[in-house]
Image (tube, rainbow, N blue to C red; front, side, top):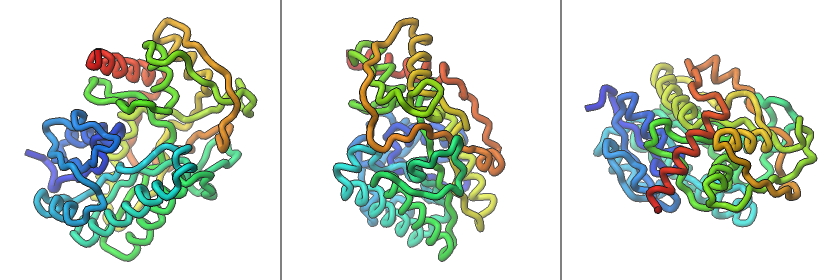
Length: 334
């Protein structure tokens, strides 16, 4: 039995980040219900200790039934579409999946008495800032529909919290990577675009090479710099954020979630070479439209607000955990 007063509904809990959040919640003593339509998620990543419901967050009747039957007191919302280039090609898909469906879910929460809401947001809301580190109060100018769809949901949550007995925390992720250190979950998506996932696939022979998009950025080696945060540290912040919302029900939060330091594409590939003791073939290509030189968090606010102490802030460890998971996937498929 749970040691907590209520159950947490995790939307998108069969996906990469959502499945790690489920593990973190269970490890912290919460009962968990996962709602996922399995469009991109994997049923097998949901642990037996969690209740699984296949369905869509847009199904208000289903969400209401889950809330009533399981005593849901909080929602962690990870369901959505996340591929930036696809959002440019198909913006209506992103405004539907990420904004319209989130509106329906928020309405279900308010209507059925759920008081706490954790939202999976993104640093993409900032757009191109020119800053070395990006604080939360930086002007928001998303350069693609993905970022805008997330910003719209942040705005909805802010307005709803002002009007109802409801509080929320939106965590703006930077570059999430790695896998559960115990090997219980990891990134299973085929055709993933995340650099570390792509690089460890290449290391295991699943790809011929890794593309380096642009070498003329204003960074120490000319390649784009990003703030890579281990997925287990990221979801630990979600659990702490939930506890903060419970302790202080009149206050909501929007915070960056990153380590506050960046690694370039070349830094990451060098780390993969070190961890695997081999050299990954690199193919230099042109810049991608809209890619900023650097995207690194100013993480002072989350450190001041939550007792968050990252455990895996080491690029080689992040790569090693991602590699271990990729090997596990290879063994399963082989």
